[in-house]
Length: 108
Image (cartoon, rainbow, N blue to C red; front, side, top):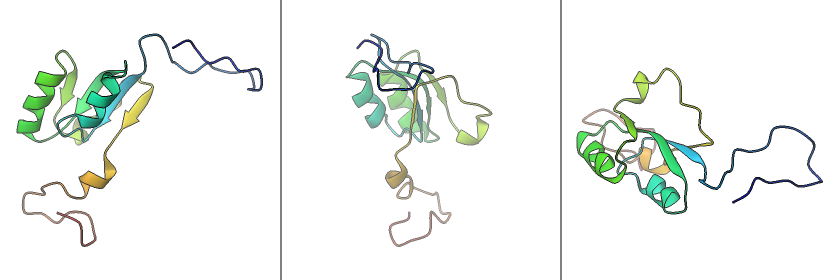
């Protein structure tokens, strides 16, 4: 997809949309459903973050060569990317290993 060039936009930085798609950072990636969908449309994951070891194994299989960080608290900065994704609804339903989840009836 070529870079956007609309005459009605003010001059400024051009979005980083190339023939190779967007670079993506996936936080709380789980087994990478969102990122897998994005990759199927030409975008590429630059980093995935997921704390659960079994989900990490799935991510390593689905996204070979992509950096996987286990704990989001280990991140001091995100790599340069065009898009950051996080499944906020499912984060409230994730296993909390005996700790309280987010407030509300739907929390794990």
